[in-house]
Length: 255
Image (cartoon, rainbow, N blue to C red; front, side, top):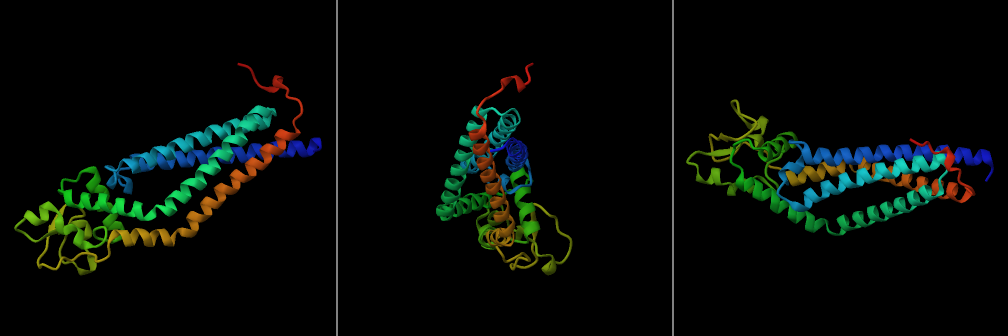
């Protein structure tokens, strides 16, 4: 490889590592958002250890990607073979882990769906109308997705407040605006005038699935984009590593 071509490869690798570093920032930020945002769906599943573990894994993967991007930038600019080799190896491990995680989610999707359903139904059963963080998150989901319950509105039939009340109560966040009369709150419980609740008939599971199908192209595009960046980074790093015959450590700044 000629000197000019080597220089172009070096700066292209620096650019791709910079993009990889930014991807790590996005992944870590997404994990932190899911973990800390009071209105994200993760709050509803806060009692699930596996869901919390998934958030921590996202944060860890993001931080690790940032570190790899930094090492790749350093190895490319200062032409350090050991850093480039380490970068290639770690990137290969990340790709393998991503493929394994995707396959695991695909083949275990029924189990994950059942687990999520169990957790959400328990949340609905324990819903007290006291506006806790979990309850606020579920109210936000039902109102904005225009759904009621997880499978259907019948999931609310086991709620302790509703079953023990002498009034005809229903969750306010479920109310179907087009079928409601009067002013209702966005949280806690409202009193129905008839046994037929003025709520949405669609369960939130169907609404979430519909949202995922609608945005499937975007999700797949992001996944393919990340995979392409990783593949290009691997190719450039191994090419640069093979064409660096001597390492000049005097280029590395000393502090």
